Image 1 (tube, rainbow, N blue to C red):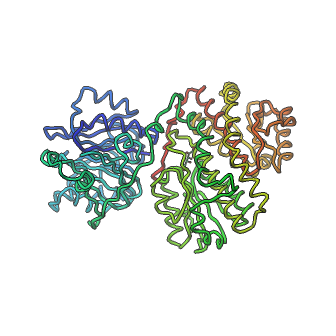
Image 2 (cartoon, rainbow, N blue to C red):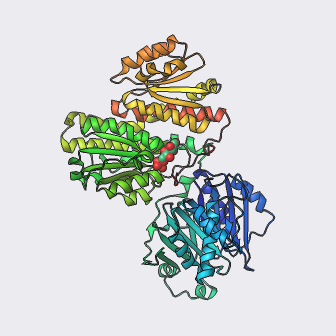
Image 3 (cartoon, rainbow, N blue to C red):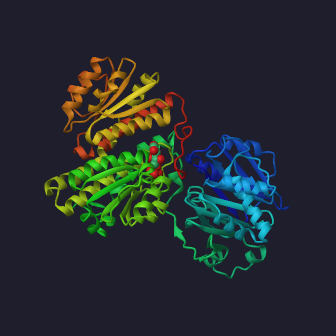
Length: 631
Ligand code: F6R
């Protein structure tokens, strides 16, 4: 989704803004732009359709000076991707410039009113309506920029994170958020603004997360203030930040420490972030378990569970809500929670759940899963469930994001920033966190035998090493990939814990290689998809040695009888499937509930290599956004 960067201080802003836009490229975008106020007080805007590099080429011979600026990568919602629709947008008088993430839902009504007042519009965007509304308010009510922003936002229905420059105040950025994330970084006599912390991390680790309906004013120091060195830095910076609500209630800035390092944002020798993140998984899984599993005592301690044990023990039902890959992790958790904790589980797409008037009771526990912690539908789903009195537990990767902040309790996955748009390490960490949660509830409820609990805890400890062994088969998968680039369609099959893995494998392939793929429960094949099987159709079957293994073997026979080409993911030492399938990848044996952590890795690698051979943009696939902050 769109990315916001802002800077005000004493350095030249352009380089910082462009670098920030590059850091945000992973979020997905189709155009980019920058606005700067130069020394002479001119407000210059440069925009380009396409990549940030195209913006750089366009701006190369222009005046890019100025110590204050805002910049944006746009992911089109209202109006096609084009230079005109790219942000920033000027107001009518060109005194103001705005960048915006989100959607102004009532933009048509607001636009009509402004047109009647003589305002004209150059773009098709909802954003331009907002900047005109701010200017109109400013002129009509004779207010300063901050007040005009507050008053304009009071009229807005929808979601936004905005930043506004006013050429009459060349030392000030006014920004605000509702539903779209916004972070302020506090440097030495300078401020950074961004839609997530990745553009900020190399300058400062002191950040403020702006809350919904807050308006923040960031002011650079004047020369006189810089000269006054007796003031303490922290007090000094705070005095130049003003935070209010859109109704002008004063707020106190709360400064947090950023837990992110610059090296986490680099590729470290890998050709793509996705491959780096696939390879990081043995370590990230160990990180997710560190401090939570005590291998000496064979015990799991999840503080978010321990502090709220009764809510889980009294739960009549657990509702899991998420989108995309996180939803697949939720589906795996359904098998684990029902098996070990014997609590009925419903797994809901957040986008459906939030609108279908679901029955939610006070004794329900809602588990929200989100890598980014900002997915608009998941956020809305938990807001709905919270309003009905349910207890909200979230599994999230990005520390301090909106979803964990709105939750009653939860568990961070701690895998570091995930930059590849296709989620990999976040998925396996979500599965680990959810499995630990299922085991904690089961142990507390005594619905899992001690023997089984101990066995799974010990097996969890083995997973990072076993996953490293799976990664050793990367070369083999790269070879397979060359064979399958011809395919227009793929089918992925799995059963039980590995049915969600089949769906996840299909999603990975679709996302990055643009090959159509469907994930199905293996036994459902006979009810329709079998009609698609021919020698043209690759079928990936996830068939580790689990409860339904024999049945899946029969499915493979059925595919082969119809000349389908089978790539099978099997447990080590499996000779049966090896003799039937065209290609096999072996994964180490483990407890059934943990097999997804191993079987998903070859599917991630297969999708990756097919996309690379096809020449696709693996880390930034077309049309996709990393953090889906609009519904
Ligand atoms: C797929 C993928 C998406 C996300 C989905 C939810 O590779 O990344 O399907 O899983 O958009 O995002 P989060 O987990 O951030 O809520």
